Image (cartoon, rainbow, N blue to C red):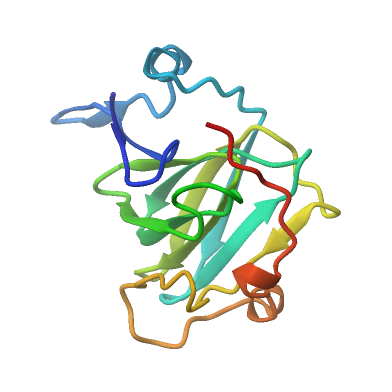
Length: 186
């Protein structure tokens, strides 16, 4: 398993080792010991899966407030997505900055999005399946979002189309107006 830092502290890319032969392939998608050796100490308690039928579907930018904030380990198991993490930790040197990466069923990369970051993704193909682990249960009372096209963040989404959005995501506030109780800790 290869674990790499990104431009955002705590957000890491995980590339599983894939072992293949004439029958197909095998890989470990999660290894607690490998992550601990890298300094990532997370106890995942739930697996989630989403399906998006239409190319250009955008889900996010989502997060949960403390004390129900979530770390997510995201992978695309069918199709392709552009996955994004945004630092929303007040006082962070990278507050409002984003990192994006293409996750596909072919490249098998995963993105670890820690607490204090908003998360979203854009489907780059039809019939996309995304799976992710979380370390906290979903809490509707703590569920929040930021509008996907906030100009202060300036995410460079890789498609120039009007995305397919949920009503919730269409009405999400700008980062400067969003409820946020994350503080940066060195």
